[in-house]
Image (cartoon, rainbow, N blue to C red; front, top):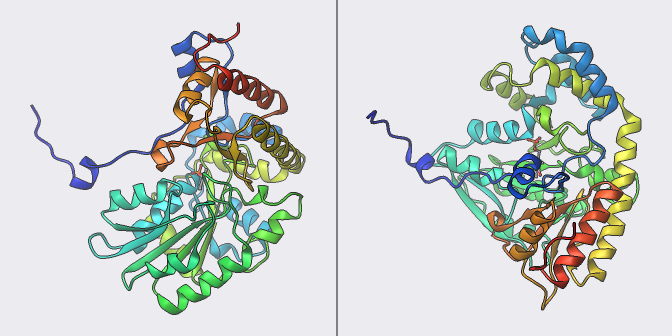
Length: 383
Ligand SMILES: *Cc1c(COP(=O)(O)O)cnc(C)c1O
């Protein structure tokens, strides 16, 4: 028997809980058609221009990517009107979030600050690092108390995480409040970096102008002590290619390129991302579909008696009404009907469920199944 031992942080780890896969549920329940509304993926699939780029570039897979992904950085710098020295790209924004923690927080000495609940990658990667996590509960309506968040910042705080719009609630704080938080953080803890995770920002607001009203990045207002993270996984339809990026202080970007694994954004991912940026028709179709269906789904869920939170993202957080079957029962009865949504036990919200906005057809199938389940969760699924 080999006798290896792992670090105590690893031995004690509760891993990230991903959404269930379509294949898994197809096999488990012998179903032909399974709909996945669990991971906030793009309802329209992969952008056509990205599919074409992947085909065109497949034979180049034997080459290493160009170091530092300069073409993608230049395109992103152009998109956001910043110097390309301030752009980092990563294997999903997950890689960038992880790297920021590893670059800035010293294990056993420093801490990070975030809300409870929040996107689980921040606390999980901090734990792996051996970095203390200080958490401020969300308000009862899932809004943010930035005063209270600042209260728990200490001299040893190196990173403060804010997700806007938030996952899993869809809440989006006013841009001015995030700006004020950055200014007050710079005062209280000049050594701390504010990480603003804008993974869902392009879905914010009721119309195409929403992003500009809510986003620090889109309004050209990124404070000196802040990083804004974005991703190709949601509105750009490339979750499986793993590409995220950030706009950050230039000095920090240089350290990022020194410290990360050299080729984490692969050649095909880079080509797909460049093509997705060009595919404006796909992206506009995505944004208008999500906004329209978000409105309709919010209304229908309330009509079914669910308590549903207003959302600025491509998903909805809801709770079955009083007297209805509980969230876990609904989740499992939906699975038997071939609909995968997201239970939120791993976010300490066991009474809630999160559903991604799908196509009109997928959303209708979800609503019909949920209506059945709320009436009688034990009934056999209709054939
Ligand atoms: C989906 C998501 C991301 C993006 O993750 P990728 O690694 O880019 O796929 C980042 N932050 C939040 C809050 C998310 O929900």
